[in-house]
Structures are given as structure tokens and as C-alpha cells.
Image 1 (cartoon, rainbow, N blue to C red):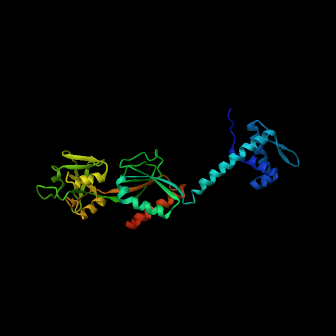
Image 2: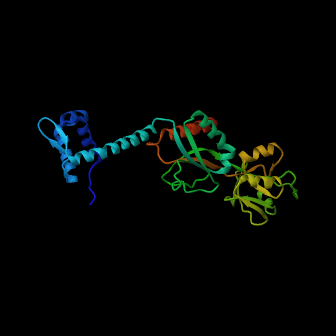
Image 3: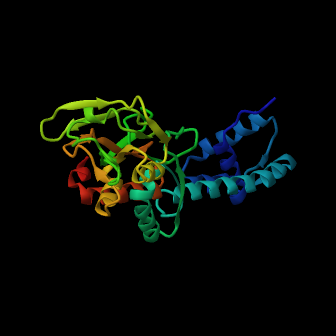
Length: 305
């Protein structure tokens, strides 16, 4: 039958053995001698063995007590080492941060921020899991997750960093029958789809009109990697719905053009997710503050979010 006793009682026993005296041990523990004696007696009753011989002048170990002290000393030392190591996480900038992020976002926006953070804190390591699909962030033991959607575990804290807006793009060499001024005129054009976005929710930036474009025919390519989608658009295979932070560079290099320039996708918020506001390792607090400071320099409102 398993004994049900307190590790704290074991620790008290160990302190008594180190001092060889109940009074000295009680003084070091800042507790009454009577309380200490009662706790040791409770431990002995639980084990069903006498551990200490007591007389008016000294305390000595019984045979069982000596055997118990020999085994529990290293165990308590190991537990203290573990406690010290965990406590250090509250105050020291070291250890590993497990991060999940969309691969396209990481490549085009996050990678250089992560590098700057790691340069600033050389004792910290990042393990980065990249996927354009929402992985099980709890099952994968993720510390920080970045999402460009509103779908995430309800018990996670979500901090907005900014917004992502997509625009409709095409190759400059793609032939069009007429000037395109409304998304309705796109229905007959070949399309490159970026999964999982299968409906392009658009709004007119001038009039506020909204329109949902659902490609139903002539889908030439589907991919969950925006680099592949962008390349297919540049190669003239079809039109694509490309995030502005990717498209603007390609448009500036004349590799893409924007269609229906008054129209854009409804903005999706970029969120940083983490599990706790308190009781977190210092390295996570440093990382969270670093990200908020970076994006806050772009959008000052985020500093107070």
C-alpha cells in the first residue's frame, strides 16, 4: 500500500538530521519546537517506522532513519535544483520559445523581427513552426501563436498587432477584353486560389459598397503558399487575391498590376496569442513586449491595446 505523506514533512525530517537537534532545527525553520516534533511524529506514524531516537540532550537516527535520510537527501536536493531552475525562468532571459505562425506572414513580415529579437537576447532560442493552416497550438505546446483570423482557443489571450488587407492582382501581360471597374467583371477570368480563402469579401474604398466574389469556374491552381500563388499570377495563369504587404513590392517592380483599384478585401486582424498574463517565463514577457513595441511603432494605438 502506498504511503500518503507530505514532502514537506520529509524536508523537516532532513533539517532535523542536519542540525541534530529539534530546537536548532525549529529555530532555522522559524517554527515552534512542538510543531516540528508533531510533524516528525506524524511522518513516523505514516511510515510505520521510528526514524529518530530522542533523549534530553540529543537526537540520533535509528537504522531506518539513517536509511531514509540517505535516500531523501539527494531527492530533496534535486527538487531544490528543479525549483531554482524554474524560478530562474521568472527573472532570466534564457530558454526556448515555441512559436506558431503562418509561413507567408513569417517570411514577409516576422522573420526579420525574430532575428532582431534573438540578437537582442542571445540566451533565448526560438523554435518556429510554420503552417498556413491552424494547427493545434495547445497540443503542440506552443507558447506564442500568430493568426490572421478570429478563430482561436477561447481561453487564450489575443493581442491585435495590425491588419492584413488583400487586393486583386494580375500579370501586366494578361489580356483583358475591356476596362475592369467592378468585381462582377472578373467572373469570366481564370483564377489562382490561395487556400483556405475561397470567397473574396470585397469592399469599395470610395463608396463603401460590399461584394463577395466566389470563383466558381476556371480555377487554374490552388495552393496554400502565397509565393506559389503570386508566381502563378505573375506568370499570367490567372488573377489572384494577394495580401497587400506582398503585392505592393511586386507591383512596384512591374511584375503585377492591381485590378479594380477602388476595391480591396475586408481587413483581417493579425493577432498574437498567448495563454497567460501572469506566471509566465521572463523570456515570453520579453518577446511579447518586443512584438508590441515593434508593431506599436507602426500603429501607436497598439501600445495601449
